Amino acid sequence: MSDVVEKNILCALDIGTSKVVALVAEVNDNDELNIIGMGTQPSKGLKKGVIVNIDATVKAIQKAVQEAEDISGFSIKQAYIGIAGSHIQSFDSHGVVAIEDSEVSATDLERVIDSAKAVPMPADQEILHILYQDFMIDNHNGIKEPLGMSGVRLEAKVHMVTASSSAVQNIKKCVNRCGIKVQDIVLEQLASSYAVLTDDEKELGVCLVDIGAGTTDIAVFVEGAIKHTSVIPIAGSQITSDIAHALRVATDTAERVKIQYGCAMANLVKSDDAIEIPGLADRLARRVPLQTLAGVIEARTEELFGLIYEMLEKNNLLESISAGLVLTGGAAKTKGLAALAEEIFRIPVRIGGPANITGVQDVLHNPVHSTGVGLLMYSQAQMEEDQPIYDELEGESGVWQKMKGWFGKHF
Image (tube, rainbow, N blue to C red; front, top):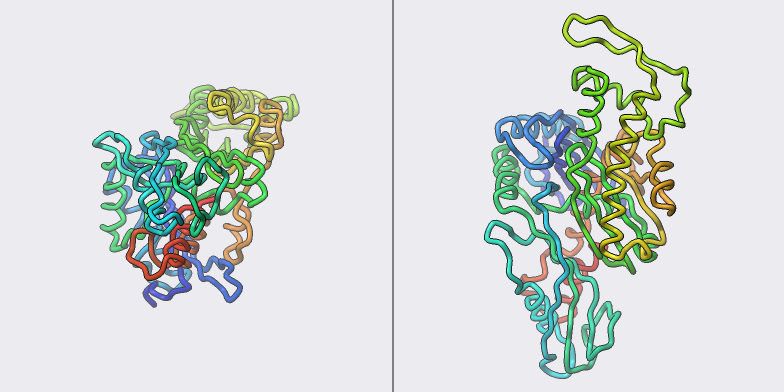
């Protein structure tokens, strides 16, 4: 088995609340991703995106990685990792510097980003991403590539994402215990955006809603730049729990029923449709109308969409997302979900899955794997740039190319 050290081989680990997915891909001659290995294992060591049991998480990662290695024929030694959870925080920041020689240099760009970073931050949080939004020179805004432009005053608007230091360290600890080097830790909705959003959607304005098992992760793009990120602690596992309580069944049964028969709108289900579900312990099985199941799912989903609507309204983003909503993640496969979202938001809604890839059929266009494939695409973008922004590079144009990769390519 070959080690994954070749330039055209990429690896990603999606460590989620319900599952751990390991993906291996090769970059073909057309710079397209071909998925050549995938491993999936149930995850019992996380709660709402945060590791609560290191040993259980390590075991799940090891099994998923082993499966991906067996299929691909490569030994995974390094990977990009996704992160989510309510500990994620984000905010806009603003940096201002004087242009040193009347013309914007790479040094000026680094200085203005450093200025934007200089904000008070809780001791238990660390910077995950600094996502560039816009540059301004002498009150002229909307500048995307300021290098070489003349002026006196340079300003930068950025979106900063931070994460709990302990949560980040626990993820690294689990991955390292499996003998894998963490290449980078990436916000999951940012990763998913690489896999499911088009450039036109980002430019026109779009809200990505990634509904996982433990959290719903949101990212809003306007005019090609990220404008808002947030995490809502309501997702697929809460829906499963509601079903288990309402129908008085075991959680595993509730999850299976949700996946096989679930619908997000009760009026889309025939009134006479029903399923037989097993009783708890030694109780007899009984028949349950599918409209009852759909009613439980619809109630919790309406609550989730209501919170997203309030978030967009609070941040004055409803009028900015002309391209509408893109729903992804495991729960996005629920029948009627897009129709319910369109009814609530009154804007276009589509279900998004990984596109522009080849290989393992289970991954193609499957919303479950949007984060994993997005991590691979993020990895590919970073591989093309070779080094991060703050490395010492020769030539200003080289530094600016790195900055575009580090900031601009996030959108």
